[in-house]
Structure formats: structure tokens, C-alpha cells
Image (cartoon, helix red, strand yellow):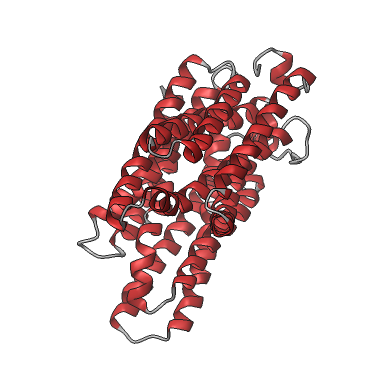
Length: 401
């Protein structure tokens, strides 16, 4: 019962953390215009968050000067302070004349610090989940983590829309308040880890370790692809189907919502029926995702079916790569894996938008063609790797394959 309660706390912490990130993207455009910032400056605020999410995930995931509970509590408090400070400064600038240039640099500094501390929230929470599970139960634990991520990116924009009538910064205050409540719950409900656990969590793990480098590459490719789709799909559908802005926005909104639901449903299904075969789950996801990307190029009129296909592919593949990486290493190396998985998410948020817009500018089919090709080659490499049978603790026990 205590372990179930701990899982619930970590699920809600990750969920509220992702919501706090997701509420920012829909409001940054109108907020920037109200404050006199340019589109380029608003884009920099988003990209800076992604970059320092990457750096923070790596740093905090490997930090061991405090136990996981105390460290997560400290990181959450610092992150909440930066979110609230950004919202307060935006409100203040809206009622007092301020230099747009000076305001931008202050905002940029706040988003850099915010991204750096946010990176620690999923990294530490995921490390806790990994350390509380066994290879047999890790798929279910990671599905919990993945579901929190998926729901956060659906509920965050919904919160922004629902609270827009109150004020543009209201969702940021609400997200900060939710995380503060989660911090208090964490402190009251989750026990401190033992000194032995702290020593074991200090192990270093190289991203080039042959046990995990394939999974890390696959995860990076998946997160970059996901972000490329998110930033270019609106242009692609409008240009392909000749829709107006309103119809395109409605189609994309419903489509992404359906895809998000399919990610969550797929991961729940996989955690129940494929929990002992994360390697097979990963290969299945890569295959389905490749079909979905090819379908975007050849069967664009089946838009909703393609969103569903992509959601299923991402659901299997994202859970498959993170679980496979986790069971490929030993218990004392779980914090290292968690930091890399979080860093990969930040990398996708940083690299994906720039790569996607650059490729789309070159040719409207380029983002999907290149991603489909790379994912297909990664799938073939996965089959080759399976035959090579790279040793790992889980493969020795017959768990990964």
C-alpha cells in the first residue's frame, strides 16, 4: 500500500510538472504581443526552456548530495518560484511601461533557470520509479510515467484555454500552486531513502555504453520526430488539403488530442500485455510509426486515421525504448538512465522545432520523409541488435527480448 501511494505521488508530480510546461506554449504568443516582444523573442523563450531542460535533466539526475526526496523537493520549490516570478513580472510589465528589450532578457533568464530546475523533476521522479520496481514490473512503472507525460501535454493547453478569460498568466499561477501542493504531499507521504540507496544511486553511466546507446539514440529520434510533427503538421495539412486557418486549427486540435489519447491507451495496454517484452514493444512501435509517417505523405485525406496510427506508434515506441534502457542496466545505474531519458526529452524540445521548420522550408515533404527513413533504419538496426544479443542484466534473464 505504501509503495502504491508513492507511485501516486510521483505520477501527480510529473503530471503537474508537465502541465506547468504545457500551459506556457499556448500563452506565450499573445502574451509576447501584449508586452511588445517579437515572434523571434517569444520563440527564444520556448527554445531556451527546452535547452536547459536538457542540461538540467542531466545535472539533477546525477546529483547525489541529497536524498531523492529532499533533492526533488528542493528542485520543485525553485522551479515553482521561477514560474511564479515570470507570471508576476508579466503582470507588472502589463500595467507599467517597460523597455521591451530589457524585459526580454529578464524573461529569458527566468526561462533558463526555470528549464534547468524543471529538468530535475521528471529525472528524479523517474529514478525513484525505476528504483522501486523490478525488471518484471518496470514496464508498468514506466507506463505510469509515460501516461503522466501524455496527459500533461493534453491538460496543459486545455487549462490555458479554460483560464484565458481570467488572464493570460492565470494558468501559470495555477500550475505553480498545483506543484506547491504536490511538494507538500511529497514531503508528508514519501519516506526518506536510506544511505545505502544514496550510495547506490551515485553510479555513473556513459551514454556510449553498448547496453544503452541504441535505446538512447532511438529515444532522441522519437522525441525529435514528435516535436517536428507538432510544429509542422499545421502547415503540412493546410498546404496539402487547402483548408483555411480556422478549419486547419480545428482539425489539428482534434487530431493531436486523439493521438495523445492513443498514446496513453497504448501504453496502458502495453504495460499489461507486453510488460516482459519491451524490446518487442519498441520494434512494434517503430514499425507502426513508420507506417504512419509514410501515410502522411501518401494518404493525407485519412488524417484522423493517421493521427491514431502515429499515436499508437509513439505509445509503443516511447515506452519500449525507456523500459528497454532501464532493464538493460543494473539497479544502482537507474538514476543515470533516468537522467538520460529526461535529457532526451529536453533535446527533442530544443532540436525538433528548429529542424522541423528548416526541413519544411526546404520541401514540405522533407520532415516526414527523413523521419520515416531514419526510424525505418533504426528498426532494422534493432533487428540486427537482437541477433547480436548485446549482453545486459535483463537479457541474461530473458526479460528484454
